[in-house]
Length: 184
Image (cartoon, rainbow, N blue to C red; front, side, top):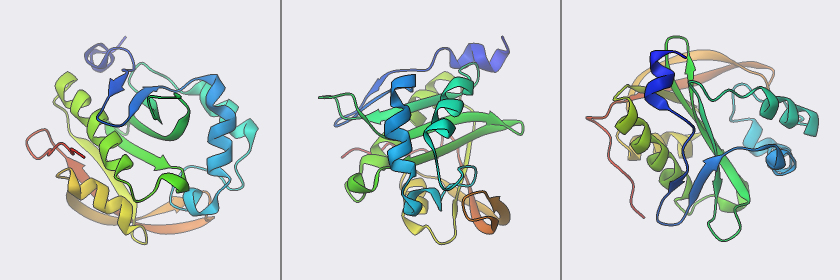
């Protein structure tokens, strides 16, 4: 196990004011598939294909690692059913934050609350910088990042699997010193 994995430990369960974040599990495959069948969600994600199939979800769930990654389902405490995902992954020498939420749950502050909860636990464990980004045509996602204290670090072209073309991404970084926890 790497030093980073030892710092992170196991994928956490996190309780926020309105949400429960828990490790993803095989039983989430159908729910993930249903949400990612929405082109309005997948078109904002760089590495997710469209159309998204149950096979895609099962494959991802079988191969998602927990050594240096924290993929968590966003749930409401009453039923534990996934309404979205937020994850921190070790990629390209750093930690990358990614997230999506089912359309029905948009506009209620759930994503800001979920990202804040995971980021707060991550910073407690590591103190490392979190890198992220949002497509330039996704101001709501950028707003989530900025609400928590992320600073824009640049802009670049990246390949979007679901769009099948290069897409403009605004890149961001969040440090423990800049982090402002979101409270609903």
